[in-house]
Amino acid sequence: MSDDSTQTPQAGADTGRLPGDRGEPLTILIDDVPVGCFAGETVAVALLADGVREFSRRGGEPRMPLCNMGTCFECGVVIDGVPLVRSCLTVVADGMTVRTSRS
Ligand code: FES
Image (cartoon, rainbow, N blue to C red; front, side, top):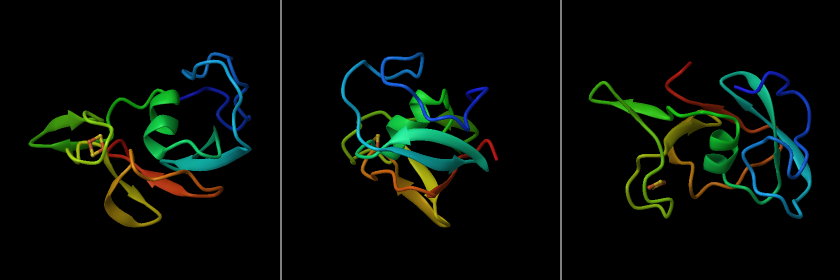
């Protein structure tokens, strides 16, 4: 949901990330929109930093990460065509495609 999401985020900039050293800048596609992130981050971090607050819907209700350790499945998204992948356990890769329930 960044307005200039095609640009690489700067550490400490208004990206939702804490300041500090970051990994290599990468780009993933979130709902067909290029979004900058950093190597080593999880998909959940990239989504949250981009302002995504609805990862999926269950029972008509929006879902987003709850446990952030792989047990609740609330962070499930479609990654590279595979449904219900736990984004809190999946590390970003350059060119990865992520689909949320927004698309
Ligand atoms: S946030 Fe609970 S499994 Fe990912």
